[in-house]
Amino acid sequence: MDRAFSSGASGSAPTAPASPSVGYPTAGNPSTGTPATKPGPYWYHMITEELMAIIGAAGITPTQGSLTQLLTAFRSVGVFQTQPQFDNSSKAATTGFIQRALGNFRSLVGFATSITLTAADSGQLIAATAAGTTFTLPLLTSGPSGMSFSFHCNNTAGSVNIACAGADTIQYGSKSISLIVLKTGDAITLTTDGGTSWTPVSQSAGVGKQSFAAMRSTTVQVIAASTWTKIQFNNKIFDQYSVFDAVANFRFQPTIPGKYLIQASVGVTSGASPAGNPGLILAIYKNGLLDKSCGPMRFTSSAYQGMCMSSIVDANGNGDYFEAYAFQDTGISMSITAGGETHFSSARIV
Image (cartoon, rainbow, N blue to C red; front, side, top):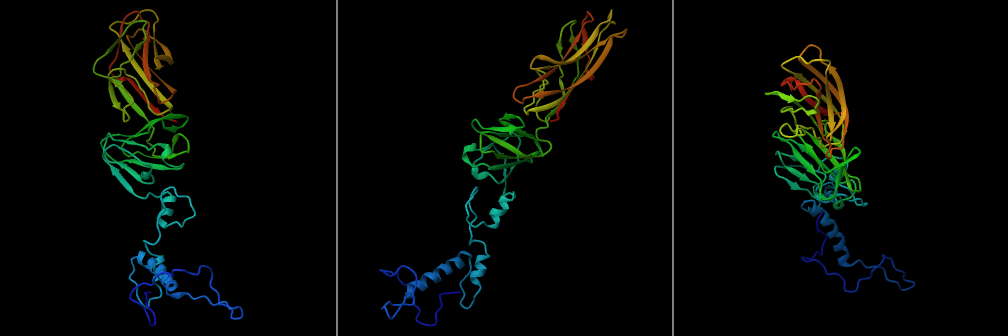
């Protein structure tokens, strides 16, 4: 298609009529003296240029004699515009808009430094390429319900943080938290609920499965008679989410709410066999108070005794902490042994 006519074409575009006749065309009526509608050169010009604009938007060079250029243009990139994110009007949807609506990512973007995201970043797969970075979500009020962000921790050096802005929270089960930690290989998608919380709608198996294992090593620890003594597990076996303090407080403090299986064991010994019928008690403390205990395990003629216990506990992910304590009533000081018999571990199960 092109601006081609049988004859009489001009080298410049016609001007619009100064006093146009606006309305619908008519064939006229000689009996009433009503003249027929005259399109005039500008009417032909309007129709031609409207069609030429579509062909031009598709990047097609107008060609006289081609009768399919308009059809080709409609099937080309550049004619239709992909509507903005969150558009819910009745405008025509491009394949790009549909793919995004079906859950496909519109792009993958990697960040090696901390960043505060905006609503414009939603719909992308955000890859954390360096450890120690923090991705701060936009305020919930900056986008509509259903605004979603997907994260993947694909660095090999350590963890990254997903943090809320302002007073926003992440609704994790029955608890509200303000931070989620991702480890290497972890992935999570968070979406708005139209209120004041982000909701995890999908996540990899490792997200939130905070666990650790530690043991007492190197030196023994003295446990006085008839005194509850915190066991100092000073050697971490593993602690991917940094939830156990093996230096100062010797406590497990998860940051994700849920139910955790805790296991503790202890071995004690002395230089002499205890007299009478004394016993050893092992306990799990929650927030500084005795929560569950096991025993007593009675000493016989041996100066050595060991025991273990396990318990399922509730943690709010926002301050709850757990420790292991031992108690013995032999009347003499004993030593908590260093080695595989004295260890402490936990894993989130729900």
